[in-house]
Structures are given as structure tokens and as C-alpha cells.
Image (tube, rainbow, N blue to C red; front, side):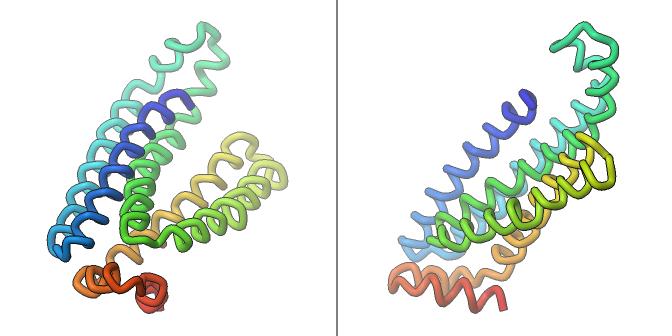
Length: 185
């Protein structure tokens, strides 16, 4: 989890940068620059996350000895490392897309997506897999990955379907709520 937290800080930096850049470009009526910024920051964050995930997977049998000397714990960490790699990749994309959404003024929408994906999907799925199907830590973690995956897909879809020219005009008029629901349907 320490490694996940370290890598997550990269995405949080991109989150803030994307939020500010997209908001500024939309406010300045530069929809092409906003769209280009979204693409660049999302792809860059994804590439960094994939590289780190590959490194973590390659060092999965060595990495755990940085934190423990116990053979049992080291083996458990090696076994959970693929889930960490998936988490790193999803957490490389999802915060950036949340930053884009906040920069567009869709804070309420992002809040609903967060609550729905984590508390309606992720936690119940984790409890189901972890306790009912007896997968333990792998099941709980897989449930949370499911919630994060769902959130990432929703934010990717909304971002992909965004008409940046209309968004730029709506940003000035304040019709963001109408534009987000039109894009979803």
C-alpha cells in the first residue's frame, strides 16, 4: 500500500494540473487546447503508471524484503502484487479524469460517480468476494478494483463524448449541468 500511495501522488499532481489547465482553457474559449491537454495528461499518466506497474511486477519477489524479513509475508506480498499492478494502472488514469471533470465544473457528477462506484459497487463486491466466496484479501481488493474500474470507464466515456466547443460556451453561460446529462445519454 505504501507503493500505491507513492504512485498515487503522481496522479494527484496530474489531477490538479488537469483541473486548472482545462478550466483555464475552457474559460479562455480555447476548446482545442482543453481537449489536447486532456489527451496529453491522460496518456502521460497512463504511460507512467504502466511503467511503474511493470517494474513492480518484475521485482515482485524482491520488493517485499524492503518492508519485511519474514518469508511468509514476502510470499503473500508476491501473490498480491498483480492486484497492486492493476491498482496502479487504474489509479494512474482515474484521478486525472476526475481532475478534468472538476476543471469542467462537473464536481457534483464526479461526487455521484465516486459514491456509486465505491459504496454501491466496490465495497459490496469486495465483501461478497472476500467473505462470501472466501477469497480473503484478494477478494476485498478485487472488489475495490472493480469499483475503480467502473469509475474509470464512466469518466473515460464522459470525457470522450465531451464536445469541447459546446463545453467552452457552456462554461461561460453556466449550463454545465445540462451539458453533462446530454453527454451521458
